[in-house]
Every structure is written in structure tokens, then in C-alpha cells.
Image (cartoon, rainbow, N blue to C red; front, side, top):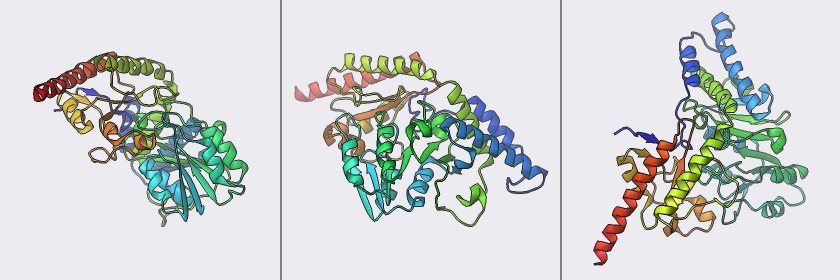
Length: 377
């Protein structure tokens, strides 16, 4: 049954109308963007217009924007392409950062506190006096809990010692300011799908002067930094979605109200439920919470049957029986982490969605509680 209520925007946000229109227009075009004839030049214009939209949203130059197939590829390009011997990451990074980081000669995973905020002093110590062989990669906001990370403070420390700094802003882009100069980072990854653009396109954005080795060679595309014919319609939709998200950034205030109503409602239904990262600044659209004694897989399936779409963590790890590495890094026992789900709002979310979620969540929790009482009797 199709979900009547979609609350999984951190996995992929519904396609914005402006993105759909841009994609349909691009799909009607003929020509390879690398061709020099008129058809090719028209296709190239679409890509460069989108590149400018991405650059504006990140405070970068158009020359610094490299289009990729996803945010995950952008992360991989940053970590492999930087060619640094040592890589320092936080323990709550997305798997698309943690996996390539572990291939470095030296990889240090930095701990976080109970609210999921990375330890800046630990990064300071890990850098050492000379960090010219180091890449530091820390996300701007966590995709599971929404917790903001002190990226600007980390970047100031790291760059003063010669380190490169990469920021995974995939969860944050379109939901909070992501200006590279303000943050002081050298590289930033973003994804179309989280912004209300199409799946299958992302970007790695570089500060002027930063060099990167390509992962995909054999073509001169993207200034020889990512070979292969560009995804014209996807890039067009990405650019349009980015511009729309930037124009509607104030919408995050409305989403924070929805999030807070949901969390207040959950605690009223189950006072022992736990909210994660609610004591620190976090994304307005994200709530990570537990249903005491009920496995997250059970919750996701039961909510789906009730027409509510949520997730049990990052989309790429949903369905796995292992506990969230993010919650584990925060010191949450696996038994409790296994009862946590993520609810994430987006541009289409409404108050009625919250009401529907609370009705379904409360019904599931009441049934489980009743079943437990029956078993005990």
C-alpha cells in the first residue's frame, strides 16, 4: 500500500515541482554536453546554470563544483582524491565516509558525547603539531539525530596546521546555511535527493586552489575530475531543487514546530521514550526517538501498514539487524538503540502528518503493552 504519510525526508525528499519541470525540459533536449555544436552547447548551458545554483548555495565558485552520481560518491571522491596519508573522522560519520577512511594508511575515529557531538579537543590532539598529511572529515549535521557538529571550530584548528578539511553536508544542505567560507572547509559534499531533487546526482564542492584526484578517469568531463557523460536531466533537477530550497529556508521554522509537536506527543503517550540529541542544536526536521521495548524493525513495518513511512536509521542501513553505529558512539546500549526510529520532515510535511503518526504510534505502543500484560498474566 502506498504510504499516505511520508516522514523519511532524510533518506530522500519528495521531488519538488520546480525540479520536475527542469528535468522534463532537459529530457526533451538532444545532444551531448561535451559536443561543440549548437545542441551540445544548449545542453552545456543547462549544466552550467545548475552548477551556478550549487555554487551560490555553498558560497563557492562555479569552477569548484564537481557533479557526481550521489552524495556517497562525492564523499568517496573527497576521501580518496585528497591523497592524504592520515584521515581523521568522527565516529558518527555516514558509512560513505567511514568506509573509504578506513583504507587510509592511518585512520583515527574521534569520539562523540552523549548528545552525539564530536570531541573537538580529541581532534586537536589527533592532528598533532604537523598535519600536512591529514584530511579531517566531519559532517555538518548528523543524518540520524540531526545534531549539529562544530565544523567551523574544527576547520580553524585543522587548517592552521596544514590539514585539509572535508565536510559532509548532505543532511544539512537546504536545511541550514552551508557557506564554505564561513565554515572554513576545503571540500563539501551535497546530495540532490535530500533537497527535493532527483535521486542519482550529487556534488563535491572545492575551495579555490584545492586539487583532487579523480576516481573515474577516461573522460575530460568536470574539468577532468570526474569522467563520464553528465546526467543532464538529473543535474537540471538538482540545480532547481537547490535554488528552491535556498529560497524557502525559512520553512525550517515551521518544521521545527512539527518536530516538537511530535516529540511532545510521543512523550505524552510513553513517558519513558527517549529522544536523542534534543538537548543540543539540531536540524529542525529530524527526530530520533525510541518506543520502549519495541524493535525498530517492528515499528517501521507496523507504521508502514498504517500508511506512515519512517526509517530505522540511515536508508543505506535500514533492514540490518545491527544497532546504529551513531547511537552506539553516543553510548546508547544496543538494546535501547534497537528500539529507535528516525522521523524526518520535508517541504510537503503538514500538521496532519504529525497527528497521523501519533495516532499510529500510540496504537502500536498500546497493543504491544497490552500483549505484554497478557503474557505476564
